[in-house]
Image 1 (cartoon, protein in one colour):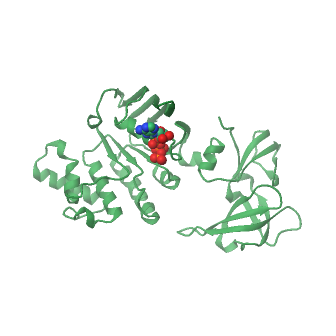
Image 2 (tube, protein in one colour; image 1 turned 60 degrees about the horizontal axis):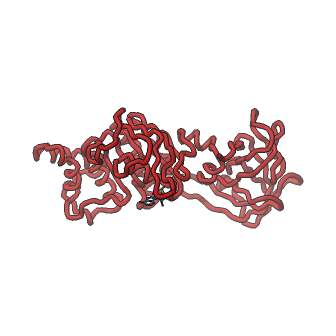
Image 3 (cartoon, helix red, strand yellow; image 1 turned 45 degrees about the vertical axis):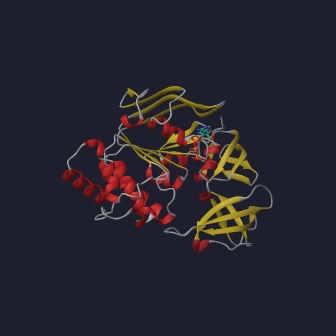
Length: 346
Ligand SMILES: Nc1ncnc2c1ncn2[C@@H]1O[C@H](COP(=O)(O)OP(=O)(O)OP(=O)(O)O)[C@@H](O)[C@H]1O
């Protein structure tokens, strides 16, 4: 459906996109993730035709889009500040997305009703935009973007301004909706939770390049570099020497899975692989609990910050029932299943 080949965009000496290759298949939802300034919006703008690449090609359904203006690319756009027309009501906004179609008035009205139903706003056609909540406005923007049945729907921080609860709910709804409609989606977000919940495939960007692309599970299980691991929020990353099934780390010996590459490596220990016991056993690593954050929501997971006598701080995750208190001394062991050797950063 969409292919970027070797796409480069430069602003002065700096490449906002640096020889990017990316494909999005029909019916696929791809989320582009990355820190601020990594080139996510530039990527969307190039695909949308709002920005010409300095090198490389953008193909939609196999056709080179060079010289094709934005409005002729058959794309649906829903951008950060969803730009609804405040003087039109909700139905008028959705109808705007249909105007190019030259449908009769009845057909337009029917389609607007259908789309508002689809996004969970039945009967809202005559509501004034300022009277709608942030989440409702976002749904109107989505209905407007879906109205012309775009071959590719592009979302830029689609849920950026909403509160967390609403975002989590909408993300699940969106995923179901896109599945049902068979929509092809390219979305940009800096929120990894949102990307992981929405995407069939995530693409992590760093300084205009793709640092990793894969299913959410692949990326989570096997971050391709220290950069990706840290971007995903993993902070237990250290240099270590792997020898057989054990790694020598600043925290002492850590078991590693079978087949782990040997020698000097960068090791990630996911917080779920850091097991705490209180009171601490006589030997092994001892740590003081310096932080304890209850995540809340549907999960009863608690994030712990631990200070060992030697070595960098450690992050652990445990169940609320087993969570030690701040200032308590705990013993720490490691689970090999949550230990990953990271490929070296390029
Ligand atoms: N019009 C422009 N002129 C000069 N530099 C630009 C322009 N647009 C973007 N850049 C630069 O290109 C780089 C990539 O910007 P881009 O907006 O694509 O990043 P982003 O990943 O979308 O960031 P954010 O998450 O903050 O929106 C940044 O360094 C930015 O400063």
